[in-house]
Amino acid sequence: MGRVVRAHGPGGDVAIRLETDVAACVAPGRVLTVGREGVPGRRLPVEGSRVEGDRARVKFGGVESREEAEALVGALVAIPRHEAPPLPEGSFYQADLVGLRVQTEAGEPLGAVVGVLDTGGVDVLVIRRGSGEWLLPAARVFVAVVDLAGRRLVVRVPEGLADVEAV
Image (cartoon, rainbow, N blue to C red; front, top):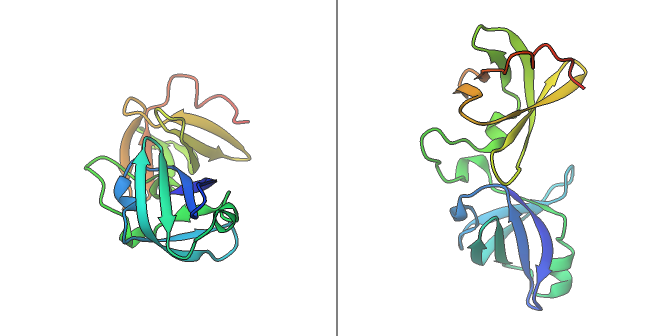
């Protein structure tokens, strides 16, 4: 959902770079998991928040000083999937796309989504094919079908792109 990018002020607030545009994810009363990859995170209640663009200023319960906030810089911030706010029809959380099999409209397998790059505009899918990876904008012109239940993504690939060896 985001990452702590810096401490904000003397009272333990943090600035979080959001990877979602759903402000309700950091609403007061939510309990978020804050931690580093591969290490169990701490569950921290949101006492206050203010969202501005792709950043949120958040006051977590139990984080009372700038020093405690600085210890969180670089940590990932997540919300349990079952607590995530619903999205509008046709929208998806980036994490839901990771692991989907990618195929053309003709059914030709092209690999699997291994990541999503947040570019500030159109997200870009990172697709692993064999030992390499290639990138495809997650725009409607390229993405024909997102089938979460079937764990597949059907794409329209520009002519010649699927023939290029992934790097």
